[in-house]
Image (tube, rainbow, N blue to C red):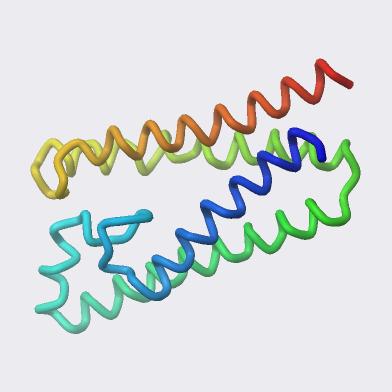
Length: 145
């Protein structure tokens, strides 16, 4: 099994856990559940807003499910060159977190809208780790090959 396959499997496992959390335990404070956002509980007092937020959460979960399904297809049927390009695509797509999401969550964290405090740093570390995982796997594959 190649290092790229291992990186893809790790990502699939992590994202699958995230999908389960978002679909079945969206209010959890684990696995990127929305329970870390103080607004999650407040939204429950406004039925229209809470339904809208739940719709968006399930939309994100569905998108993650598409990613996992496509990664499984790549893992099971693609050759090495496709897996190399997959690693590049994963690095680029995961990096988008720092473009739009990180500034928002960092601001929310600074305004005490997230519990526990410092969650934005935890997310930045996790995302950086995932980018690093694919970067190391990509580099390793290019050097060894």
